[in-house]
Image (cartoon, rainbow, N blue to C red; front, top):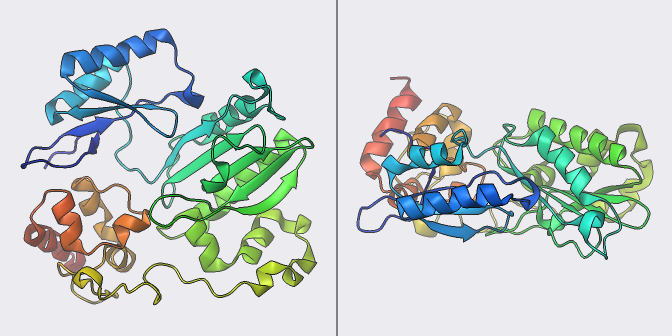
Length: 323
């Protein structure tokens, strides 16, 4: 099946439709770009949806119309691999908002320019808010920055969705440069050491104290061990014994050397056999760091993506065996 430069949507009666989401930095869009989006929707009979990340999704596209839509927008097709930095969600900040304490637009655009579409172990979302009202919901982003009267709060590990998690406060700094330096250290450490897991899962796995020590270096306070971090109970991620994985939906666990079956968990497969990742991506399953998708058995993922599970198992087994 040829790859389509769009995201597969829900399949109805065997009919596939796709969505694309043009990049709109900080959600600021010029009338000319809006008109291009309108033209695509009118000519290709698409539906427009405002997303929570300050973009406009163009959905209900036929596979053969996806490349034409990108051409009409004057854009290169988006990356097929969704394990990348997404657009940075940015509030109006002191540029426009009377309540803002910091210039979130300037800082957010710097982060957008530096990190947009950079490949990561999993998808990464960022949010920058100009005050503690946090209209960008920065505390639920992999990396979140919130402006205060005296500077910025920098968070890491937030996520929403099926497995919500508030971000951990990593540090409070006073300047934009300090924010940019700290974010760079966090992104670098995560990229070099994480598995196929979101930032929050990575922090839970290695421990918040270890994460802070790695990204703050000499600035890390030695007495942090006396704080709540040391008193936190052991954190178990989905699939590590506290959520019923292994029995729900008939799912079974897989370790290196085990055969892949229709009941094998996606997460186990890609951790035991990372060379299977391109096969998953070829069926439109690009979000391999998403807990919701990776905690599914193979048969369920095949059903959602409209592929025959037996054929998928055969392909994955060929890859596992090196065929």
